[in-house]
Amino acid sequence: MKHALTAVLERNTTFTDDFTTEPYEAGWATEARWFVRTLGLEGELRLVTQVSPDGLHWCDDDETPVRVVTEPGQVTWRVREFGHWLRLRAHLTGADPQAKILVYLALKS
Image (tube, rainbow, N blue to C red; front, side):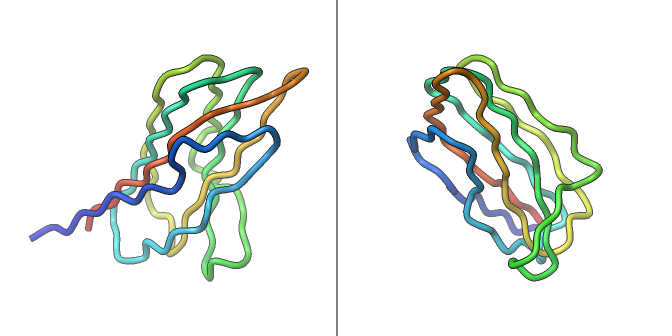
């Protein structure tokens, strides 16, 4: 029997600068999928999956492309062979950037 879990990492959070989500330990999972819902956006939001062996030291996932968000809506992407820990790194650009978002991490074994 497969196990599944959806973690809500951000809920209706407004950011005005670059940020990372809280790390999530997912070593038990074989599949992961990010869902990022943008409720409001001024500027551009770039999202990068980061991986870690210990939840302390991070690097960008070299197999997952950068997601660029320019308008409200939802984006999703898969992550495979990620090791034990996952998080998102976000970069906001623009004159007065602001993003109100929800971030979900769906995991399956």
